[in-house]
Image 1 (cartoon, rainbow, N blue to C red):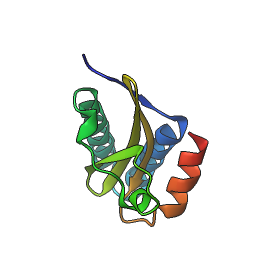
Image 2 (cartoon, rainbow, N blue to C red):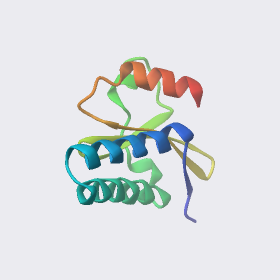
Image 3 (cartoon, rainbow, N blue to C red):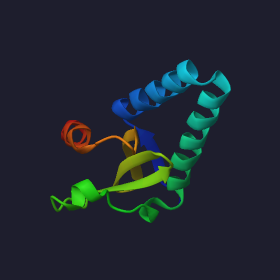
Image 4 (cartoon, one colour):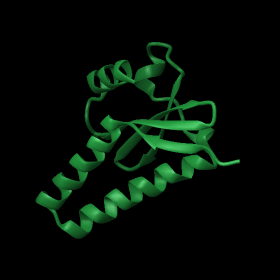
Length: 108
């Protein structure tokens, strides 16, 4: 049975921000493509939520409740609870994510 995938408020804001940045600095078509591919990657979690690896920043502090999948360079960080996948963060993997992760995970 497929899992339900939900984007948290923060993840939705992340996706809007990524889209707006790409549209401003590249093109609307590129922004639409990237946002669509991120959402397609998120959708794959319905069937295979365990496929993602553990974010290295969280492993360093022995947190294994969260996983990540990639649409490079974007990282999609999520947690699984029963039959639901909660996407917590969608961020450019080239950023230092330590403070963003800790803040966002504390909110979820």
